[in-house]
Image (cartoon, rainbow, N blue to C red; front, side, top):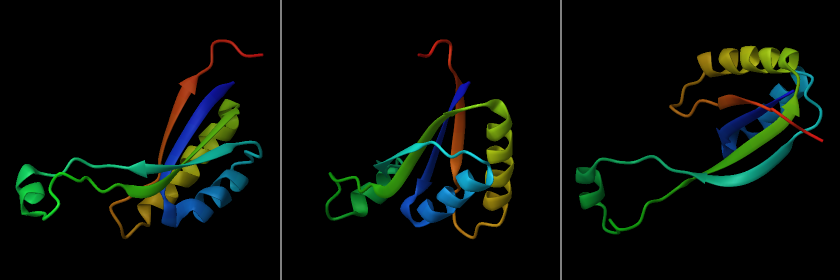
Length: 101
C-alpha cells in the first residue's frame, strides 16, 4: 500500500475526479488549498500591494491504494498534462507506507 497525493488548480478538479475513476481509485479524500509560486522581486516591486502574495485556488487529493492503481493514475495524468495549453499541470507524488491499521 502507498499514499498517492495529487495537486491541481481548481479548474481541473473535475478532470482529477475522472482520472481517479479511470485509474480505479474509488476511495480518496480532497482538500481545498492555495497554491503559491515565488515571483521575481522586480515583479513584486511593481505590484501596488507588493507585501501580498496571491495564491491560486487549488485542490489536493490523496488516497491509500496499491501500486497497480498508481501506475495507471500516473499514466493518465501524464497523458492529460501532455495536452495542456496552460502552465499548471496536474502533479502527483507517491509516498511509501511502512505501517497502517
